[in-house]
Amino acid sequence: MLIARTLNGLMAQGISTDRARELGQMGYMQWLGALPAEADYEYEAVRAYLAALDFIESDPAIAVFCRLLRDSLKYPLKPLTLALPKAKRRGGARTRRMSI
Image 1: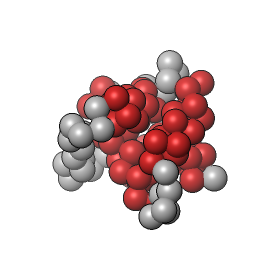
Image 2 (image 1 turned 60 degrees about the vertical axis):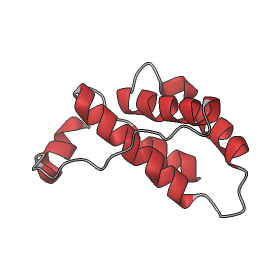
Image 3 (image 1 turned 90 degrees about the vertical axis):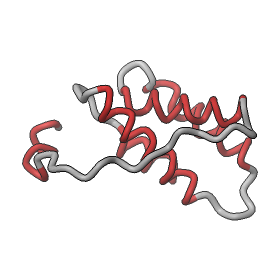
């Protein structure tokens, strides 16, 4: 359920590379923050990666999300590059509706 909600929020085609990076990082932070405290990170990360695998080629934000998952598993002691997006207007609800 949690990963489905995260992936649904990341599905956006035709976005810039910078926006895909922002969305992918926010999706990772959302997913990570929603994990239960007693969760096995490695198990949950592999499960999330496998759920997202089919969308890597078609959705650039999901590709960023998956890269973060892979990096966190491959280099567990190395900090990930994560940042909140810079505040700016992006078109609001009208732009979101037109992207669907």
